[in-house]
Amino acid sequence: GEIPPGSLMLDSTQERSVRERKSQENLAAPKPVKKKVPGAMTMGAGMGSDTSLTAFQDRENPYLNLQFEPQRADKYELRKTYKAHIAPISAVALHPKKSIVATASDDHTWKMWSIPNGELILTGEGHKSWVSCIDFHPKAATLATSSGDGTVKLWDFAQSKCVATLSDHAQAVWGVAFHDSGDFVASCSMDHTAKLWDVQRAKCRGTLRGHVDSINAIIFQPFSNNICTCAGDKTVSLWDARTGLCIQTFYGHLNSCNHVAFNLRGDTIASSDADGGVRLWDVRMVQERLNIDAGPHAANKVALDRSGTVLAVASEDHSVKLFDTADGAFLSTLDGHEEAVQAVAFDASANMLVTSGSDNTFRVWS
Image 1 (cartoon, rainbow, N blue to C red):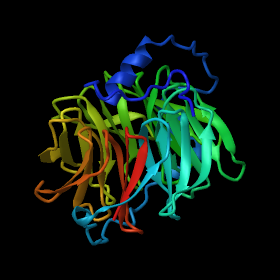
Image 2: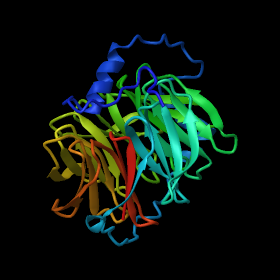
Image 3: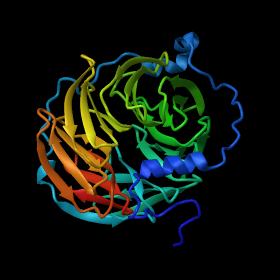
Image 4: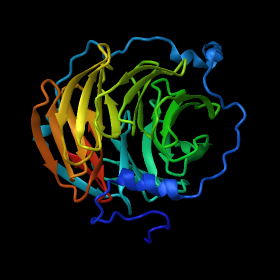
């Protein structure tokens, strides 16, 4: 039960956010020497002719014209608390088909739990530093993690092991996300770049360059070939994964951007920053639709429910704040975490909300 060296318990007297602390620790640590990896390249004009990119065919978003009932998260209450790790839990991911949640922690491990029983299914050990992000393959046979050790790892459930370590980033990796085809993974790093990886070959297919500070979060626009990133340079950017070019940049945040999320339709981006500022962006009109003040504490993560009308904000002030996306109206606060809330996710099928925090717990609200 001892804390391994190099992972820190959060000192409640520290005013710095977890992200700031990790960034400073990472920059102070000695850098591993990166070897040139054969086949790793920055995307060029020849990219589009590769047959393995057939996953990037244009296709219709099946949710485009569907209407969903809003998740009445403002009426939710804390149902269960799970002491899941021995250090802060920085990310949660929900299994696409089953009542299973995956957690990523500063204790260098990730774990998979059944909910609502909270039975431990799997523990993933292998990262040499904090695990920052976690995402399920759309068919849920594998899972991807990112870490402060500068790597992305792919884990196979059938083989119960790590099947690939992707180590082209020069610094800590903050985020990882699967493309909806499952053939590609995108990652973003403190090294100011995002990368696209071929899952089958475990090779870097391209590097997205343009941000001038740490890229803190990454996500694919649903059922599209576009990647969305947000960074310490206060911007949110949209990229074409096929060309590696930046399509749009959204300006408006007044501090470092911590996180981005899409609605299911893919026409709205929610982003949050270190001042607690949350913005909703209209992707088609390329403009800010709404500016919500969830401060003064940092807004660590954001999530939109299936209807796209309810926004949840994981706050540094130990709470989850809920807002109406139509007009930005404040709905309610979910209180229960004893330290900063690091992650939040809506589970539409079970009509619940899952959160995790610096108090080493994840919690279920319904």
